[in-house]
Image (cartoon, rainbow, N blue to C red; front, top):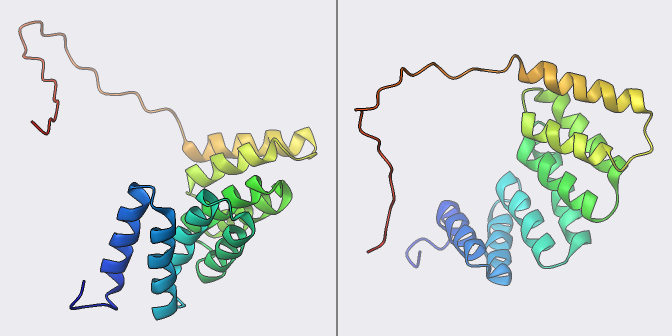
Length: 166
């Protein structure tokens, strides 16, 4: 990276590596660097939302999450991280509203829809609203998929994979 100090991909990967090592302040520094280089890039705001949460900086996490939603209103990762930050702050209504706004643009974001249903448990919403949201979730997932039948073959080799660093 010394040869390309402004290479966003390298900065992002380094930030992710720091996150994997739970080096939250180092990760934050990388994502803030990314944000300074390209303030219209959605990625550092999503990652900063997560890092701020890990550092206990809920207000900053919500700010980053809101900016991510401004930059990518139909991106489920932006809505999901904002939803998570808002739930941490006890802001269930805004969390549900953020998820709904994204789902209007990206209705196939099933994980976000599931997170929204979880957030709705904290609302004093009418039971029918929650029931309808669950029905919509089920409808969008579609019919359950049954795996293809595999004929029994006791003499067929069973393959079990284990990776080892040894």
